[in-house]
Length: 342
Image 1 (cartoon, rainbow, N blue to C red):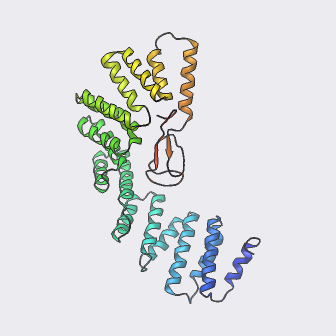
Image 2 (tube, rainbow, N blue to C red; image 1 turned 90 degrees about the horizontal axis):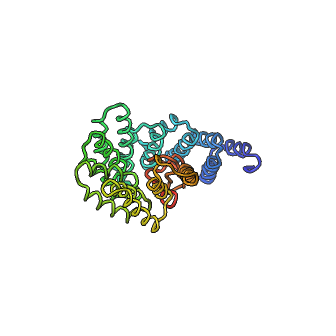
């Protein structure tokens, strides 16, 4: 019946006067199966019927309530799901599940204040640390404050995020950008360096502004030392290109070309070759058709491939997302490196 006539199978369960423990478990499992198959209406029908049975124990009713809430959540009926999980907060033994589901709902609604409150409550109950997630929610609020032009509030929220999670890349990155916009080079360099030291994958995101901040501070030696260090740690060529720019300014174009060519032999990179072409054949100078063709091909290669990748599901966006649009994980999207990547 389940495979060929699922609605008739549902009717069989609905006509049972009062389910015993075996039929209750089967009905719950059947509802879960429908939900996993995307047949949410059938899952809701089964679980609603269970929930209204008068002879269910309090625990059985709570279990049915959890399943019905998950049905509503899968169906996108967020208000109904939220109401059920809030009701479950008062039921002993179900608070953790209810809070976890409420956090999911608040994320979908982008109700970051409520998400923070629920995560803090879940953490206070002795569960796993929620500091990383709370820091992300605070960064979301900071982004909202920046859009509204409230920079002091954004700074306050980002500092709070760092208090919760000292190695929060997002908070350091955003604070670094704020400090750069205010020409506060010292704190800007501190935040950008914190990003680079916390995760080598993000060196490419911060190495250019970090170098600029250090040069503004009159610290070219420190900038050069960090660039050499980062070149050994990162898989891409962002640090190399920054060092090449410094060499060009201080020593001239030919030394910059020699350095870049030498390093590209050791670690090939499309972006590096593109920069070598610019240095060797500046756009303002008359080139030839072959050089222009190679330049166009390199540009197309760089434009074609995604710049980021989710380490959990493999989603490849062109811009940095802190929550993966595909799998909804936080902090799993990182810059792509290698031959075509940065």
